[in-house]
Length: 145
Image 1 (spheres, one colour):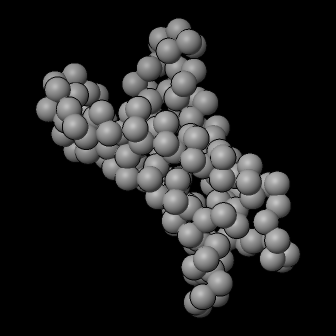
Image 2 (image 1 turned 180 degrees about the vertical axis):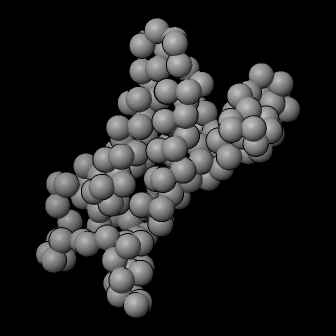
């Protein structure tokens, strides 16, 4: 059971102990996209929570503050986890859901240019979900324990 849980959380890392260009590429992707999301979107919503709550979407009748809180959790806290490569695949799931909601519900009917950034983030989070964080991550270190 522990090995199944470990595989689900940390994925399969290449058998070689050497860091590859793929691992560096995944590190650049994780740091770039997660840093941008966390500090351009999540932190702003966290710091200015009350101002955002005045105009934020009430997703599925959860209430504006709950919906905003879930977006902040994904955009800031899950992005930081991905930047560190900590529980990367799990952290990608709330971000994928958030970007699906942003692109196809909150921005529904808007010109593609308005939806484009959420779709680009969505593609990056999906890539990270399927590839995992690479060897330059805390997940890799934890999987070796």
